[in-house]
Amino acid sequence: MKLKVSIVGAGRVGRTLGKHLRRHGWRIGAVVTRSPVSSRAAVRTIGAGQPSAGPAVGVLAADVILLGVPDDALAAVAAALAKIGGSAWRGKVALHTSGALDSNVLAPLACLGAATGSIHPMQTFGGKIVPDLQGVTIAIEGAPKALRMARTIAKTLGGAPVVIACQNKPVYHATALLAAGSGFPLIEISVQMLVGIGFSRRRALQTLLPLSRQMLDNIERIGSRSAWTGPLSRGDYATIAKHVRALRPYPREVRQSYAALALLAGRVLSADPDAALKQIRRALRKTEEE
Image 1 (cartoon, one colour):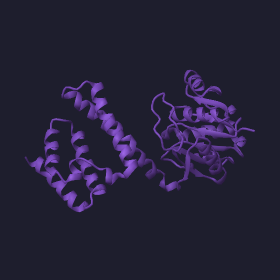
Image 2 (spheres, helix red, strand yellow):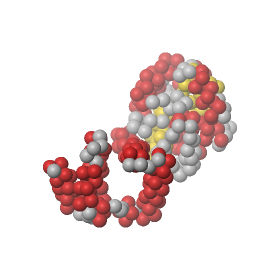
Image 3 (tube, helix red, strand yellow):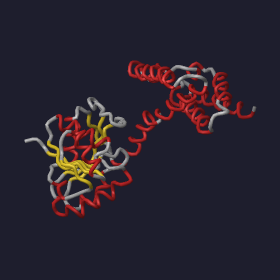
Image 4 (cartoon, one colour):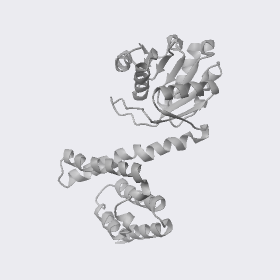
């Protein structure tokens, strides 16, 4: 018999997990969002489920309750669900999808006998796009029963479950921001800068996206250090200084980001980090003094 899952907070992550689980034969129970309109839209995206505007007892008519609400609302939602369900939580599995928080935030449910944990796919969920989770790392943690369920879900999704210690979740999640989340503003400011010197926005994207894709492909094939290219990789600090001068008219955040990323590259990619950092700081300081 296929398991049944209720989804509380059917945003980007909740809808994606629900859609994939439905495709693999899971039964979808309550699909909860803040409004009737958004809950019905979520059910349409998932392809099944009973729409609900706000938590209700019907959420517990499932084997697993998946909480996909924002981090800052998770504790309050867990407390509200505890008041609604009471003793009916005993034996249920409750999993949240936060990357930074651990299962302790679901303590109100654990106190009522639920097995609590978390499951977080290391993937970007953009707009209405439903990403493929095949081969994606999925961080899991929690009580033994919750952990077993999280591992089952991860494997059903085609992902690779990895157990993360509670105290390590913030660092784990920070790597997602560094590796992917930071790419959004970096690409956008680069597009805006190219538009500022005469490119159309479409041409700017067509210029930068193949560059970014090739970078990732190179890293996958030969590793970051071997794939590293550009003036820093060659020790061309004069070009770095030229870049810094050219960036003077741009907002402070742009200049600071360029400097911080140059220093980070020197530290983690250079064969001689101390020497590289010294040269980079000298180039940055020289342009500041001019």
